[in-house]
Length: 286
Ligand code: PAF
Image 1 (spheres, rainbow, N blue to C red):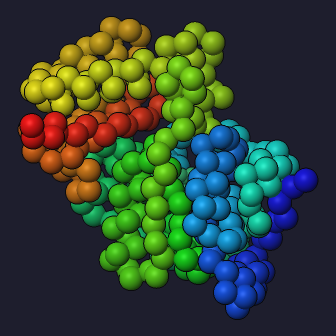
Image 2 (cartoon, rainbow, N blue to C red; image 1 turned 180 degrees about the horizontal axis):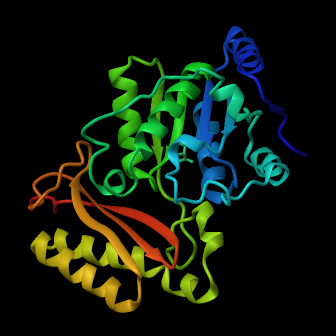
Image 3 (cartoon, rainbow, N blue to C red; image 1 turned 45 degrees about the vertical axis):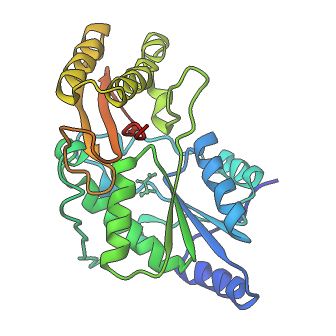
């Protein structure tokens, strides 16, 4: 069995309007396809809060840089329809590029502050592309709640800011990262890894977790970040784009742990760019 697809905004709106008329809460799960267990967890989380679940599949050209993997990004619509169905999705919205950005399209949305630094510094224009497409998808669907993975933690904060700033009437829910048994965060890009790179990849999560417990135990943040960076480089990561401690909401860099923080990393194995993040919490007072 597989989930049906609509390709136009008009069809999407008709379906959502009928569900709303019947008093049903609608959840939206924006994706770029190549669905894996992490996306299925988003769909299941939506199912716990909403009677109807709409998955969007759109490989958004505006969020890829000129030297990034837009052309080779995995596209597998039939397999996605089955995975979406198995997780309980009612509908897939898979528009064409022309439906999303018709001739004459001229609007871009830029969320300052939370988009700066981290991935924003290494992927110029990426978060403008994300903010623009997510705003469009939220407005097109008119869903009650939308679900995003915490794996893309900066993206989640960009989306939260966007929705508040533009008064888009939707609740944004972050869903914890789904991991392989060895800790590697699930990602559609993991398919690019060679066997050797795949063996090294879980070190990212392991490093973050070790750093989080050291910092929670009182170790200074700057020295712990430096040790983590040296460990990743020494183990064979080709490039560590960033390894940082940030405030959980504003994403401003933190030097001491007075409030909940987040450790975030982006590193390359060959050409494959992996990102991950974990919470780091101050110890409760005795
Ligand atoms: O996280 C993703 O897959 C994408 O960035 C999103 C949110 C679907 C926007 O294209």
